[in-house]
Length: 101
Figure (spheres, rainbow, N blue to C red):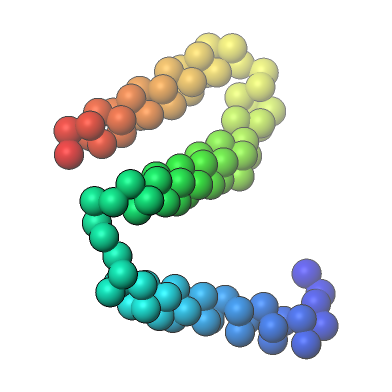
């Protein structure tokens, strides 16, 4: 992308300060944080759901779509079945690993 210098600089600054600002906010609210309150659990659940949704979107749309839309895979039904079977096997094993922990 051919951004102007001002746009590039502002994106770099915002990217660079995201983590330190998040740490500062976390340190600021840590004194008022009650680990087992219902509000805390709802907020954590919402944040976990949002991050899981972003992860699933990135995996399915940005990563797997490029692999699954190749002409070699599109023209071979046997390869499609094998690829999808291994995709589901991998997802199942990751779910098992998450449940195990």
